[in-house]
Length: 235
Image (cartoon, rainbow, N blue to C red; front, side, top):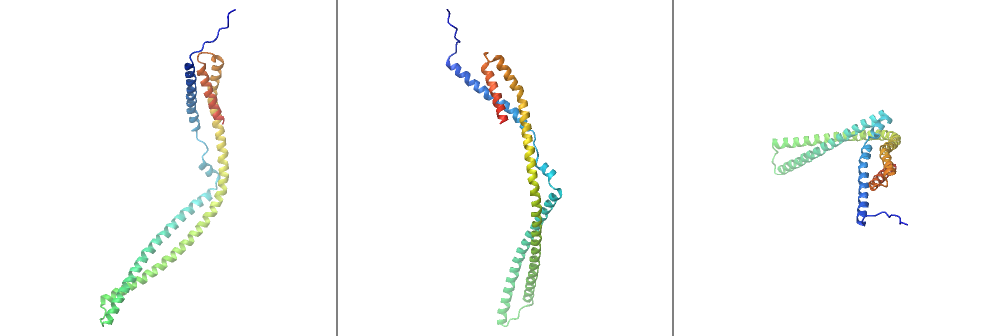
């Protein structure tokens, strides 16, 4: 009685290479399918700014923007007035120093019975006039800065009130955005699975028809790559 025939196997090095290239083919097919999934994932989802426009009170939004512009302008004016105050302070110090020097010159002259010249008297009078003018302008700037500070505090208080209203509205905006994003993700997953279904059907057909053929390693590689990609999409 004849012994049953045994399937002949190639050298172990060939078998190792076959397994190695099967794994490489699996990775390559998985990578190629990833390009298709990447194209699907680029489809635009919900836009946060659009949802904000739809759900937030437009009057409160406009008020917040207007207050921000006014606060910026008021802060700019305060900064400008501060710069003017700095320049005026330097001018006041200079005129004060000039007055001190002229008065010292006149004092020394009077001690020596020397009458101040008309030019010296005029210079001292001009220095005094400039000093007094600077003092008056400095007071005016201080009053203006105080008024601007008060206006800025009022604007900031109004801005905080508007921001409280907007913050309450943004909670609803965030909730709606999360809901739409969840729907978008589910839609993309469904489309991705639908795009992969022909590849899965082809893998099943190849497996049942040719799993014992010479090309079975390639069939296994293809089927495994498709299954892995479907598992990744479902995850």
